[in-house]
Each structure stands twice: as C-alpha cells, then as structure tokens.
Length: 98
Image 1 (cartoon, rainbow, N blue to C red):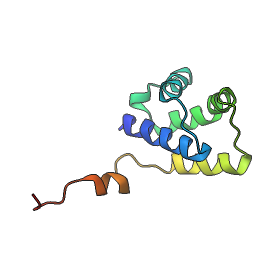
Image 2 (tube, one colour):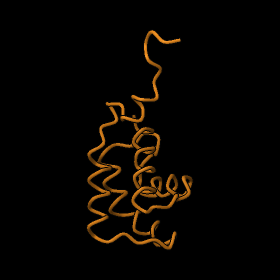
Image 3 (tube, rainbow, N blue to C red):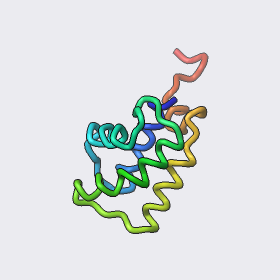
Image 4 (cartoon, rainbow, N blue to C red):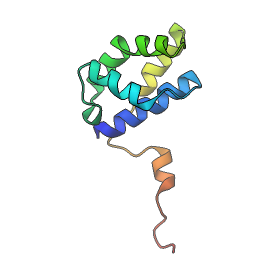
C-alpha cells in the first residue's frame, strides 16, 4: 500500500506544478523525512509535505502559493490506497472479453 501512496504523491506533486519532478529526488526526500517510500502512511506523507516539499520545490525552481499547497495537501492526504483509483479501474481488463 505504501508504494501506491508514493505513486499518488508523485503524480499529485507533478500535477500541481505542471512539471515533472525527478522521481528519484522525491524518493530521496521522502527518506530524508524519515519514511520508507515503499511503506508510506498518511502520517509520513503529512510530515513530508510539511518538512521536505518546500525544499524540493525550491531546488526545482518552482513555487506553489498557499492555496495551491493546501489543495495539494488535501488531494494527497485524502487518497486511500485501499481503493483503486479511477485510472486503475479503467486499466483493468473487463471480465468476459478476449
């Protein structure tokens, strides 16, 4: 489940910026925040957003205003890795088709 949380975090950060950030840099920043990216929990993500995201954005020469940061935080923290995303649902083969 943690890996799905990392993938969601990555997608949301890139979407909020309108720019792809290096996945490996994000992975390292999550480690620096004290979490294993493949075992992320909601609490780990919250800590990352508060402590490490601003530095990552600065390194990328990017900026999100306060409203955009709150929106990003809400989208990321509302994610429930126990449920498939619409993208994952539509990517599955339909039963009974060949």
